[in-house]
Structures are given as structure tokens and as C-alpha cells.
Image (tube, rainbow, N blue to C red; front, side):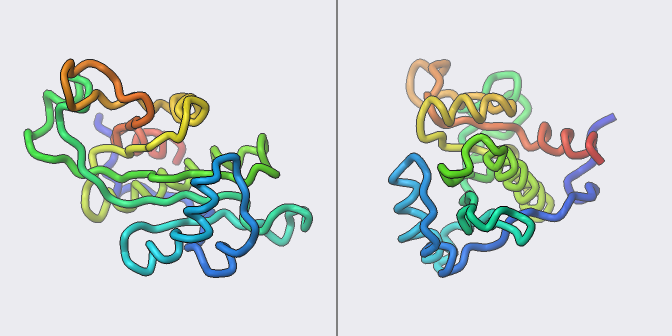
Length: 193
């Protein structure tokens, strides 16, 4: 029996909120200066211009007040991918035109809360939002752009696989662009509910 469609799932509430001006000035700091700069200088502006959406995980009233206000964030937008970039077992069932996907363009947690599971929480929340997008418009996968090998390994722990390069030879993997089929995300949430 196939898993239920995204619109049939009862999903938990997201744990993040839309980025605000006070979030971007809160002193968020992770290990990648490019991610810090994007959060400070572009996250809110891109949201206002409808380029992307940035969602923040904020410290709650029950958290230690010494923790940073923003524990982490992620940014999502829409993208397309070519059928040829997917492994043959997936691509053979798909049409030959650009396929819709959800892109997690950035995901970062504050370096002061490293090892507390906030990265995993943010990824789970991004998956919830991807399922909501899928229910409204359709998307075959979630794509991530990992910043480095450490980030790539993080995503691989959750089932992400490298996309295949668009140039010859077609089987060489892109090192830091990965995907997870929407069907796998949907199945994981249908099993959990």
C-alpha cells in the first residue's frame, strides 16, 4: 500500500518562526562566516522580496537564558532539477522536463549550542515545511546544498544521497548537492503518526 499523500498526513506543528529584524541582530554565530553573513545581511531582505523563506529556532522561556536568542535557522526556496541528475532507479519513472523540488539552501545552528540536537530539529522542521509545500504544489524531492564534507555527512545520516552531475560522465556525483525523495519524507512521517 502506498504511503498517504502529503495532504492526508497530520503533521506536528513547526518549531520555528519566520525570521525578524531582532533575530538577525541577535548575534547568531556558527562555524561558517558565509552563513553568519547571510543571516545578518540577507535572510530578512530575501524574505521581503519573496526570494526565500528563513525560519528560526528561538530560545524558549524554559531554556537557559544564557543560551543565544537564535539557536539556529534554515532557509528554503523552490528549485527544479533535471531528471538526469537522479539515480536511474528513480529517474526512469519521471517525466523528461524539469522537476519541482524544495531547496534547503542554508541550515545552521549557533556554535554555542553544538551537540544539543538543534541541527536535527531544524532539518526535521524543514522536512515538515517541505511536506506542506508538496501538498500545495508538488515537489519530487528536497535538495540540500551542504557547505562542506561535515555537513554532507550530516545530511547523509538522514538518507540524503548525492545528485548525479549534469555533465559527462553522468554517474559522477556532485560532492555537496544532495537529495532526499519526497516519498521517503512522507513515509517517515506517516509511520510516525
